[in-house]
Length: 632
Image (cartoon, rainbow, N blue to C red; front, side, top):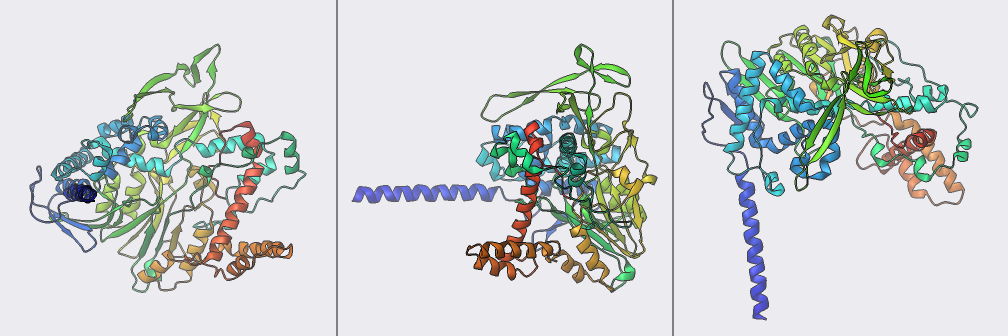
């Protein structure tokens, strides 16, 4: 028995030593929170104070010192997250995590965004380049100041690589990948449906809006009627001998039910006469959060005091307030990518037709480094409009022309919001900033409010932006929309502005933005209704609007589910518990409401089953067909 006890004691000792070693590694990788340290390159001392939640306040006498210290803090707290963001944009995740990331890397590498980032850095204005250089130096200093590399690199048996100025641009480009349709999947889906379905059915599925719309001004769109069986009879599909999988989309096609909110209330409609802005940028949940809260204070002849959220990897506040203006964003869901149909040269598939004549394809062999495996060579055919991404049903090459891959569409001018003093100044900065085009909501100390699109907007000419087209005879994108032609609203008559990823404008303004899959309007309509009911809004009221869990849209689905369950009950089923839960659902998206969850699932299931059946013919023709950005 003694040898068993000795072995057990030895195992426990080894486990204890292992736990202590792990604790020591984790402890040594934590950021430094106290004391003095030397950061090379600073022109004057920078003070860092953290509140009870760990949110830092930086105080400096020089803007570049603030950028350097911001980089230092980001690296200490979030370096692995920053590394993932730059790698996701550059298509370099496989080098860190292995072959499982190859599909993601191929999708990103198609646009060769590291080269795009290098072009953006090379074209940056001197003050922007100085900001990039100071921030990058601070990042690398912060990483080296850790007593141990971040624990994720220990788990991956990898070493963190230095931060470069182009990596900050890649961090911005990673948001382009999250917020825009870089592969023009929506356009490909609409094209496939238009080719396969009767016009009346296509118009019903692809309708651009509904009576639930809540634009900032203008009318709602009429409901497109459901076509009858004389137009499209699902029963005839049986003759096509569908397999079960032909009738169902994969789970990956289910769109996440998330969306951002932002609104503003003018001073004339608030309790204290000051304008209010509320913003909640809904990205996918992750650990850590996508955003990093910060307060930046600059002392001297041009003082600055700005609070808000930063994006780790970038040196400025993305959304927040500088004491003069406050601003926030929601994704605009304009149309920022197009599919181009190529006309091949006669008897020569190595060339394609352009307005200047036939041009050869550019061929690029991209090397994907794969941790623990052989490198992968990824071949890309590129045209003057973008990379070849596939073929249409007729076998013609398709090229994607994506705004995020245009170097002129990204810059660091969003940092200029730090110095804006009015709604007008902030809107001018936002319209010239290079970022994924966003709804920009702003208010100032004088009580004014405003909305516009932040980011650069392309000028389109001569084609339907929702369907693939040949650009060989001209058309396509022709420069940039002048800022004077941007849609904007300043101090609207209602004294409120609201955005929730839905359509906000109509007519010529809408045609300039296009439709990249606007969100269903029910959420925006609910926000608008609540704001208009507040005669003297307070910050507490704004919080309650954010926390509003009333399920107004689903209220018409609850009686339908009740009717269905009662029918099953009459047919001999036992559904008393379900009936009771749905009957007492409460009409709110409450965490303890089983009935709400049932109504929500009933709606989602009915929608998906109907769409799957109606579009089964599309998947029969094209196995890659899937639903993308179809929310109406």
